[in-house]
Length: 144
Image (cartoon, rainbow, N blue to C red):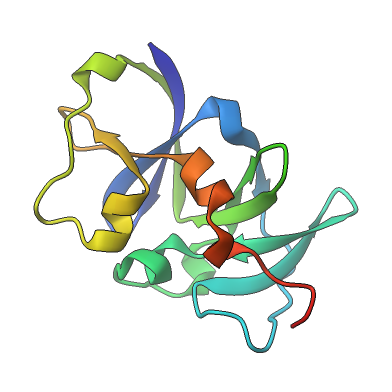
């Protein structure tokens, strides 16, 4: 069994394991950065620390409703990295059986499939926060 935080993006439900969720926070300010990939919206200050803010809609090629719909941020963390992920809505915490997760669907694009942990019987896409946090393509370089 694993506890996950469910959230919504573009009429789909996603989830991250709670082990990598530091907090859910309001996205108060966002400072855009030049020269970063389009899925990195910029940086934000959370409790005095600066974190990059990622828009999974852009990374996964999902429909975007506009930033005004995404004022919540899930702050993910690991030993070496942390960043915020925009969420259109936070659905809450639920306990899942890892054995009930199904493998990738053919409708998932290659990028989404790379971060997939599995899909629940009710269609919630469980993402691997560890893979996101370890992906060097999501690191905002200090050289920018």
